[in-house]
Length: 163
Image (cartoon, rainbow, N blue to C red):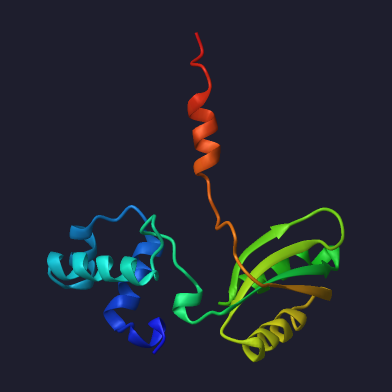
């Protein structure tokens, strides 16, 4: 049985609350969700043990949530339509992030999908956005280094203090 099939409505509401406010305290979460503080705390611990919440306690493992496919889409855009394309991408729930880029293409986005059929549906939705000329999609096979900022902070912390 997959982790996602074990998540109930309270788990999903808890994860959503953490994504919306990563600094929320357990007491705030319990009040927001209408459950006892101990219930919220035990759910968070269980989600951490299951790997649904990553070690930071605020980052989600997409695969554990049933999104087994991650893809990177480079989009060529009619420049007069750039703002509209970005607005259109914002409406697609599978789009995780969007960047305007230099080089080949104009926009890069990361999407998550439950399977390749779900990815194909997402790609068709992207292609239907007014101003999208063409796309190029690359599938992520394995995540070796998850998104991180710790090394940057460590480097900054090691700099000598300004005198």
